Length: 100
Length: 137
Image (cartoon, rainbow over the protein chains, first blue to last red):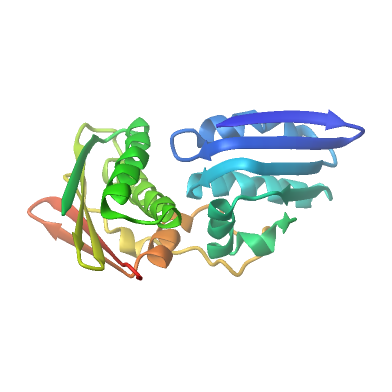
């Protein structure tokens, strides 16, 4: 798993690569910590190289969406691979997130 | 055809499940999307055991077997931890909005969604979790 965060002109691009599972979800959460400090987040999450997610990773996505909603921000998830999209579909997360 | 993997009761061991199911899936001639789904099922089942059947981080092992009978895959996950029936874990309500959703309950939901049949038994001091998947041609 690899996370790259870049902020340009008030918008934050988060590129997630690899797998987020039970073994590394704590590390994933730590890497996203700075997003939870933004007063009104405007986040684009690029998932084109993101290949696998389990419930431990979904929890962190949900926590982030809750934070964004509470702070009247924006979160867009883009370029999702079919394996990850399928897990979002099965769990109803596709209705909770803005996926493009 | 039967394959077996014995892992320790530790979160880091979950990485071994991916290799195991990839190799088994290839041998059984399964499609990649199905292999990914089965990887997810095994991870959710095994991480539940590590978290709930062995709450005191006691030693112990978890045995995973996969057996194929024609178009049926049967996974059996056995551990000697405390009695823990994963089928009784409350499932997440997937119709709720982000703000209404509790964090958690998705693991068992995914297992039941992907597999055709799940069954728990307590047998001679062991938890035995059996999961079946019907293969489509």
